[in-house]
Each structure stands twice: as structure tokens, then as C-alpha cells.
Picture 1 (cartoon, one colour):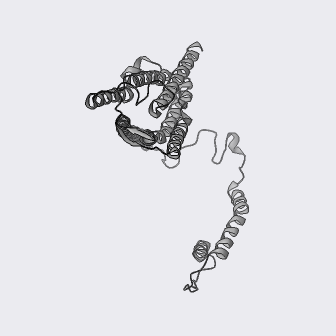
Picture 2: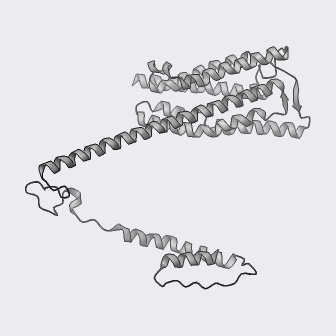
Length: 323
């Protein structure tokens, strides 16, 4: 109980810290509200500053995707503590990158119109708001430490939800009214990291699918061999394979348990209910298609002979006539 509570508190602390780092990154990229931004600080020569910035982004990418790719560090941790630890390491690498970032203030573009400035700023913060809408989705899989199956399902949901966020990383760094070379280097480096991460994640997904397919084939092969073994045993014993011998005292047709009572046939009932509910809707749709569809001026009526009992053919002809 205490261990689970500590894991949940650790997870909450890591996610709150990661959310704070993400909020600081918003101000860092937007050049607003934070003391150190992407264009603030002492500017130096372009080549050394660009080399330092690229090295910082490489370090951040190596930590961010290296820890995810090579999971030897997670062997000594509980499963529920892996993601919080990964987030804390990511926050540390992000803080180093933003703290040591060297600005390159040469302009690429700059909008002077107030409408363009306010419009791009609003679009920038709106894109971040949409992307951060599921920022705390990792809390749920980390809180399911007592159920490994539910934890895996939660992690899969989080992974599926993160795909639109990965695509947003291509666009958000470019939504700015004042683009500098340093900002452009950051945007292009971030796009390259996201692209590489997508390739690696697709490879992992293919490998996982291949492993699941091999496991399913192995289980099928084991079951098939077991069934063949039972058939050979029955053949050697002389028993009828198609009709196994009944136990002593049991006659053919005997039923046991709750299945002894006859079950009502629900198929006709469900079919009638479906016709009652969806039949009027189909009729209204057909009438609307016939009354409001404008016929072609050169169209000629076509007579099609359909057998009286062929309902499928009649529906096909009615659909063609309505279309």
C-alpha cells in the first residue's frame, strides 16, 4: 500500500515537473514571459553558436530517444516508475538545452503588421493548448501498477494519442511573427528529431507485431500438434474419432447445468426489431433520393426484369434507380 502510494506520488511529481518544463518551453520558443528565450542572451559568431546549438539538440535527442530505445536502465525500476524516471531525465536534458542555448539574431522574416503579429501569436498559443490537452495522459498508465494488463492498454492508448502531437512538432516552431536563424535552426533540428523518432517507433511497432504473430503461430502449432496427438491416441485405442464414447450412466441427448432448459431463438426477434427500427429510415431515405435527385436531361427509363422472389436483386435495382 505504501509502495503504491509512493509510486503514484513520484509519478505525479514527475508529470507536474514535465508540464512545468513544457510551459517554460512555450515561452522559450515564443520569446515571451520567461527570462531566457530562444532569441535572448549574448550573441556571438554564427558558426560557433550554430555548432553549440546543434550539439545541445543532439544531446537532448540522444537522451530523449536513447533511453526509450535502450531500456537496460529500467531493469532496476518497477514498471510504474519507468515513465516518471524517463520524464525527469528529459526535463534535465531540456533544461540544459534551453539554459545553454546561443541566440543567432539574424532575421529570416519579420512581420510588422499588428494583425499578423497578433494572429500568429494566437495561432501559436492555440496550437500549444490543443497539443497539451492530453499532457497528463501518462498519469493513468502509471497509476495502474497493480494491473500489468491494464497498464499495457493504457500505454498503448497514450502512444496512439501521441501521434498527432508528434505531427504538431513540425508546425508549432514555425508559427512566429519574428523568425531568426537561431529559431530556424531549432525548428529544423526539432523536425529532424521527430522524424527520426517516428521511424524508430514504426520499427518498434513492426517488431512487436512480428513477435505477436510468431507467438500466435507458435500457439497454433502447439494446439494443432496436441490435437493430432489426441487423434492418434484415439485411433490406437480403437475408439470412434467422430463420436467419442459417453461416460457411464449418460445417454445421448442429456444436458447439464443451465443449458438444460431450451433457449429461445433470438434471431427472428432481433431481425424483426431491426426492421421495425431501421425500416422507416430506409424508406424515408429512398423517398428523399427519388424526390430530390435531379435526373439527367438525356436519361431514359430502363426496364429491368427481376424475379419476384429475388429480394437482393430488387434492392440493387432500387438503389440504382434512386442513384
